Length: 253
Image (cartoon, rainbow, N blue to C red; front, side, top):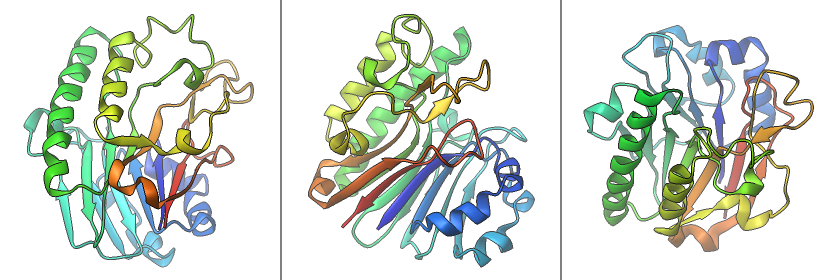
């Protein structure tokens, strides 16, 4: 089972840059998308179906052209959960879960903390999301939470940890939360296989950051502990350039 997570920073823009052609080559069983910035009616779903994804689920933000997540699958889920049931988390379209026979996949787009108000919203979201997942594990123990967490976990995950230590995405409080979240029954699938530095999934559009590999690793496929034995490989795919993020892949036996 090959699963990819990809913040496309606008699915229509990504499609105009060859996303569908790339998707056919990458050929995941399931792809979780974040920041789709569109409603289902605005997306060429027929083209995605022709590409091999008959099962498509979209959870858009109330605000037009903002946020939103999706799951595209080759296989029909047993159940799909749109949102968390927590209003302040759901109106921006940030959580979508598909349940299959032996595991569940979630597409997550955690808020960024671009200013004081948004940072407080992010912290509230993080606290409530932690509790939500802690409860969800009781009924869905085999979880793969794919997405843009908007947090670098450790210094190895960011190109300049010194100068970014006061920037949202690398604040001590955010990193502590992610450490606590992972420690509460999850495996960072990429770091399970790869401990090398300079491995990133997002680059600023400014100052040639991507060309110089001055990036951040903020996209993760976190796998619950019961699935650890099933991990086969995990990769970052920086050659895909439809967004300021790149896809991240995990494969399970």
